[in-house]
Amino acid sequence: MKGNLLIRFWVVIGILTLARDASGARSVDEQVNLLAERYRQVEDQLARSIRYTSKDESGGATTARQEWYNGAGELIKVAVERNDASGRELTEYIPHDSDSDFGWRGLFMLTRKETPSPGGGTQVEESRKYFGETEEGNHQLIRELRKSARFKPGEPTDTVHVPNTIVDPSKQNKSDSDAEEFLSGEPHELAASLRKAGPPQFFDPFASVQGDSDKYRVIHGSVSPDGRFAVAMGLPPEQSNWDALYGDENYFYENGARDYDVPNYIIDLAEEKILGKTGCHYLGTKRRYNHQQCMLRWSPNSLKFVQLWDDKWSSTECVTGKISSGPKLAVTVDLDKAIGKKTYAFVKKRFDSENGDAGELSLQINKVSNDGTIDLEASAQCRVGDCRGETTFKVSERLRLSDGPKGPRVEILKMRRLPND
Image (cartoon, rainbow, N blue to C red; front, top):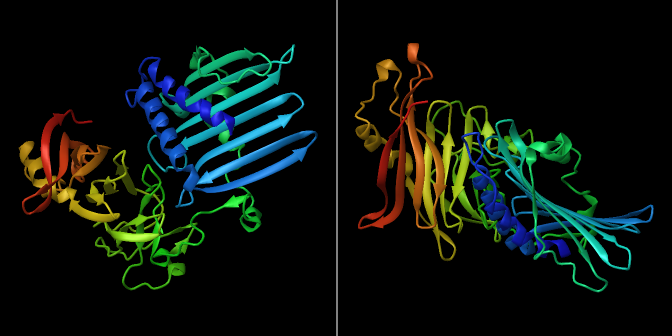
């Protein structure tokens, strides 16, 4: 659609204005940066994504809707274009983590209206909205840019050189500043009949690919930024039927013990091929089961990752790895094991099981870089007694996944004590 070419420049411009968010979490600039980067990643993978298209003609108006999904079946973009005698209206939105069970949620939305102007020209009105997290919660409008321009007959209607106006989010009506109202009225899945219709209503580049798809089920929210890779759970050794693990629209395995034997894999979604085991054993395809949750942090180039299986008091498992040319899974390292003893030594504490310390860290992965650098926070909590629930210590750590003389290793670059919550 014509609007696609107009968005890219102004998504980036949205990064350059306004102050930091007062919530103390992610600033406005940081959130807009995330949405801008997510937009770039999505645009780059649309040609190799699942696409649905529907067209409706009613009351003299034609409405075309397109939806794109990645290889794991997760929505990555929606575009709706309406044409009638009054002109043309385009709405596009790209969710970031829209179905997440935890953490930050964001949304970028473009609206563009073209109407005939006196004398045969075209009046164009555009709005670019960035929704994120504020003190009032998720899905809040954090930035809006507007453009208005009148073009002469035959003149290109590209607004790239038209100055933008920054709109104060605090002066918006709630219906204009809350993404939840918009999303609640939007269908996120076109009719199943479009699958049967075939091209151009339905395009699925994965339809003829079988690969190892019968051996795994993708964990929701684990797809890499470029849409190429994902993390999946495999069948436990004593199971041979996926139907036995299916319920509530996801797959789950529970054996009543703390030690699980559910293999987790890195998957090449384009080929539906297993590249190797991650070393983690998360037990389902849903991102969260009560306190248990599976979180993936990928590097921007989608070649480094950290998989974290977190629980209420501590992290059950945490691994880091990289994907090499081929592609193939080159290496994974037990991150929890690599930093556990050194972290306790740094804070000059010993495991104190009598006072509720199990010697297990709770990890929060903040960033994974292309060079293998990992930024995280490691903490410990008291589990029993009067101190139950209190943070014993918290440490900021910078690590790097590298190749050592005896194989891959995690090197600690920096450690810094943080205040306890």
